Image (cartoon, rainbow, N blue to C red; front, side):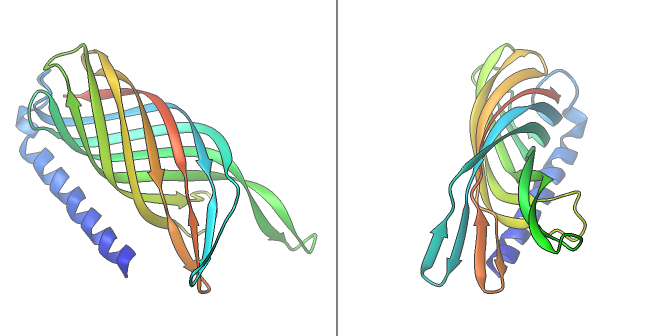
Length: 211
Protein backbone atom coordinates (compact mmCIF):
# COMPACT_ATOMS: atom_id res chain seq x y z
CA UNK A 1 0.00 0.00 0.00
CA UNK A 2 2.83 2.41 0.86
CA UNK A 3 4.61 1.65 -2.41
CA UNK A 4 1.40 2.34 -4.36
CA UNK A 5 0.92 5.71 -2.63
CA UNK A 6 4.57 6.59 -3.19
CA UNK A 7 4.31 5.57 -6.83
CA UNK A 8 1.24 7.79 -7.36
CA UNK A 9 3.08 10.71 -5.72
CA UNK A 10 6.02 10.25 -8.10
CA UNK A 11 3.63 10.10 -11.08
CA UNK A 12 2.11 13.41 -10.03
CA UNK A 13 5.60 14.90 -9.65
CA UNK A 14 6.59 13.66 -13.12
CA UNK A 15 3.44 15.08 -14.70
CA UNK A 16 4.02 18.41 -12.95
CA UNK A 17 7.61 18.58 -14.25
CA UNK A 18 6.49 17.77 -17.79
CA UNK A 19 3.71 20.36 -17.70
CA UNK A 20 6.08 23.04 -16.45
CA UNK A 21 8.59 22.04 -19.09
CA UNK A 22 5.94 22.25 -21.84
CA UNK A 23 4.78 25.69 -20.73
CA UNK A 24 8.36 26.97 -20.90
CA UNK A 25 9.25 25.35 -24.24
CA UNK A 26 8.86 28.65 -26.08
CA UNK A 27 11.62 30.11 -23.93
CA UNK A 28 13.97 27.17 -24.46
CA UNK A 29 16.84 26.40 -26.84
CA UNK A 30 18.03 30.00 -26.92
CA UNK A 31 21.35 29.38 -25.18
CA UNK A 32 19.98 30.47 -21.81
CA UNK A 33 19.29 28.06 -18.97
CA UNK A 34 15.95 29.69 -18.18
CA UNK A 35 13.22 27.80 -20.02
CA UNK A 36 12.80 24.25 -21.31
CA UNK A 37 15.76 21.90 -20.83
CA UNK A 38 16.44 18.30 -21.82
CA UNK A 39 19.64 16.34 -21.44
CA UNK A 40 21.42 13.08 -20.90
CA UNK A 41 24.79 11.62 -20.16
CA UNK A 42 27.00 8.54 -20.04
CA UNK A 43 29.62 7.52 -17.55
CA UNK A 44 31.10 4.91 -15.27
CA UNK A 45 30.47 4.05 -11.65
CA UNK A 46 30.78 1.61 -8.79
CA UNK A 47 27.76 0.15 -7.00
CA UNK A 48 28.11 -1.34 -3.52
CA UNK A 49 25.08 -3.42 -2.57
CA UNK A 50 23.89 -5.70 0.22
CA UNK A 51 20.58 -7.45 0.85
CA UNK A 52 18.30 -7.37 3.87
CA UNK A 53 15.84 -10.14 4.73
CA UNK A 54 13.25 -9.18 7.34
CA UNK A 55 10.56 -11.31 8.97
CA UNK A 56 8.70 -9.48 11.71
CA UNK A 57 11.30 -7.96 14.01
CA UNK A 58 14.08 -10.28 12.80
CA UNK A 59 16.41 -8.79 10.19
CA UNK A 60 19.40 -10.40 8.47
CA UNK A 61 21.89 -8.44 6.33
CA UNK A 62 24.26 -9.96 3.79
CA UNK A 63 27.81 -8.77 3.12
CA UNK A 64 28.25 -5.96 0.61
CA UNK A 65 29.47 -6.60 -2.92
CA UNK A 66 30.86 -3.99 -5.30
CA UNK A 67 30.09 -3.95 -9.02
CA UNK A 68 31.62 -1.65 -11.63
CA UNK A 69 29.17 -0.60 -14.28
CA UNK A 70 28.03 1.66 -17.08
CA UNK A 71 25.99 4.73 -16.10
CA UNK A 72 23.16 6.42 -17.98
CA UNK A 73 21.50 9.72 -17.13
CA UNK A 74 18.39 11.51 -18.42
CA UNK A 75 16.63 14.71 -17.38
CA UNK A 76 13.78 16.85 -18.68
CA UNK A 77 12.36 19.97 -17.09
CA UNK A 78 12.88 23.71 -16.98
CA UNK A 79 15.16 26.44 -15.79
CA UNK A 80 13.37 28.60 -13.24
CA UNK A 81 16.23 31.11 -13.52
CA UNK A 82 19.66 31.17 -15.16
CA UNK A 83 21.04 29.40 -12.08
CA UNK A 84 18.24 27.06 -10.93
CA UNK A 85 17.01 24.02 -12.88
CA UNK A 86 14.06 21.83 -11.84
CA UNK A 87 13.54 18.57 -13.73
CA UNK A 88 12.60 14.92 -13.79
CA UNK A 89 15.76 12.88 -13.26
CA UNK A 90 16.49 9.28 -14.22
CA UNK A 91 19.83 7.69 -13.32
CA UNK A 92 20.60 4.02 -13.99
CA UNK A 93 23.62 1.89 -13.16
CA UNK A 94 24.05 -1.14 -15.45
CA UNK A 95 26.23 -4.07 -14.42
CA UNK A 96 26.45 -7.86 -14.31
CA UNK A 97 25.60 -9.69 -11.09
CA UNK A 98 25.26 -13.36 -10.13
CA UNK A 99 21.91 -14.83 -9.09
CA UNK A 100 21.12 -18.32 -7.83
CA UNK A 101 18.63 -19.96 -10.20
CA UNK A 102 17.29 -23.46 -10.72
CA UNK A 103 18.71 -25.30 -13.73
CA UNK A 104 16.29 -28.07 -14.81
CA UNK A 105 18.94 -29.78 -16.95
CA UNK A 106 21.34 -30.13 -14.03
CA UNK A 107 18.43 -30.48 -11.59
CA UNK A 108 20.29 -28.17 -9.25
CA UNK A 109 20.64 -24.52 -8.24
CA UNK A 110 23.48 -22.69 -9.97
CA UNK A 111 24.88 -19.13 -10.08
CA UNK A 112 24.09 -17.30 -13.29
CA UNK A 113 25.30 -13.84 -14.37
CA UNK A 114 22.53 -11.44 -15.39
CA UNK A 115 22.42 -7.83 -16.53
CA UNK A 116 21.14 -5.74 -13.62
CA UNK A 117 19.74 -2.19 -13.60
CA UNK A 118 19.90 -0.26 -10.34
CA UNK A 119 17.89 2.88 -10.98
CA UNK A 120 16.76 6.17 -9.49
CA UNK A 121 13.86 8.33 -10.65
CA UNK A 122 12.59 11.50 -9.09
CA UNK A 123 12.51 15.29 -8.99
CA UNK A 124 15.95 16.86 -9.38
CA UNK A 125 17.28 20.32 -8.61
CA UNK A 126 20.51 21.93 -9.84
CA UNK A 127 22.01 25.21 -8.66
CA UNK A 128 24.74 26.87 -10.76
CA UNK A 129 27.07 29.27 -9.00
CA UNK A 130 27.26 31.47 -12.11
CA UNK A 131 24.54 32.47 -14.60
CA UNK A 132 26.69 31.46 -17.59
CA UNK A 133 29.28 28.77 -18.33
CA UNK A 134 31.86 27.95 -17.18
CA UNK A 135 30.36 27.34 -13.74
CA UNK A 136 30.44 24.78 -10.93
CA UNK A 137 27.11 23.52 -9.62
CA UNK A 138 25.50 21.33 -6.98
CA UNK A 139 22.54 19.03 -7.52
CA UNK A 140 20.25 16.65 -5.72
CA UNK A 141 17.19 14.51 -6.28
CA UNK A 142 14.44 12.84 -4.26
CA UNK A 143 12.21 10.03 -5.48
CA UNK A 144 12.23 6.26 -5.83
CA UNK A 145 14.79 3.53 -6.50
CA UNK A 146 14.44 0.33 -8.50
CA UNK A 147 16.29 -2.96 -8.82
CA UNK A 148 15.49 -4.89 -11.98
CA UNK A 149 16.65 -7.55 -14.42
CA UNK A 150 15.39 -5.87 -17.61
CA UNK A 151 16.37 -8.65 -20.01
CA UNK A 152 15.04 -11.58 -17.99
CA UNK A 153 11.51 -12.70 -18.82
CA UNK A 154 9.21 -12.76 -15.81
CA UNK A 155 11.71 -11.08 -13.47
CA UNK A 156 10.08 -8.82 -10.90
CA UNK A 157 11.15 -5.25 -10.13
CA UNK A 158 11.93 -4.10 -6.59
CA UNK A 159 10.82 -0.54 -5.75
CA UNK A 160 11.57 1.75 -2.80
CA UNK A 161 12.80 5.12 -1.62
CA UNK A 162 15.76 6.74 -3.37
CA UNK A 163 17.85 9.89 -3.45
CA UNK A 164 20.87 11.41 -5.14
CA UNK A 165 23.31 14.18 -4.28
CA UNK A 166 26.33 15.55 -6.12
CA UNK A 167 27.75 18.32 -8.21
CA UNK A 168 29.73 19.12 -11.28
CA UNK A 169 31.33 21.67 -13.56
CA UNK A 170 29.82 23.07 -16.75
CA UNK A 171 33.08 23.58 -18.64
CA UNK A 172 31.34 24.83 -21.80
CA UNK A 173 27.81 25.86 -22.61
CA UNK A 174 25.62 22.71 -22.53
CA UNK A 175 28.46 20.38 -21.46
CA UNK A 176 29.38 19.26 -17.95
CA UNK A 177 31.36 16.71 -16.01
CA UNK A 178 29.56 15.64 -12.86
CA UNK A 179 29.81 13.17 -10.01
CA UNK A 180 27.18 12.05 -7.58
CA UNK A 181 26.11 9.51 -5.00
CA UNK A 182 22.87 7.59 -5.58
CA UNK A 183 21.30 5.60 -2.75
CA UNK A 184 18.17 3.50 -2.63
CA UNK A 185 16.32 0.77 -0.79
CA UNK A 186 14.13 -1.07 -3.30
CA UNK A 187 12.19 -3.90 -1.69
CA UNK A 188 9.52 -6.51 -2.27
CA UNK A 189 7.45 -8.87 -0.13
CA UNK A 190 8.20 -12.46 -1.10
CA UNK A 191 6.14 -15.04 0.74
CA UNK A 192 5.91 -12.95 3.90
CA UNK A 193 9.61 -12.05 3.83
CA UNK A 194 10.51 -8.42 3.17
CA UNK A 195 13.50 -8.63 0.81
CA UNK A 196 15.35 -5.41 0.01
CA UNK A 197 18.48 -4.37 -1.84
CA UNK A 198 20.62 -1.54 -0.46
CA UNK A 199 22.61 -0.07 -3.38
CA UNK A 200 24.96 2.90 -3.08
CA UNK A 201 26.45 4.06 -6.38
CA UNK A 202 29.35 6.45 -6.96
CA UNK A 203 29.02 7.88 -10.47
CA UNK A 204 31.06 10.06 -12.82
CA UNK A 205 29.49 11.12 -16.12
CA UNK A 206 29.74 13.53 -19.01
CA UNK A 207 26.36 15.25 -19.37
CA UNK A 208 24.93 17.35 -22.17
CA UNK A 209 21.93 19.62 -21.58
CA UNK A 210 20.10 21.44 -24.36
CA UNK A 211 18.67 24.82 -23.39
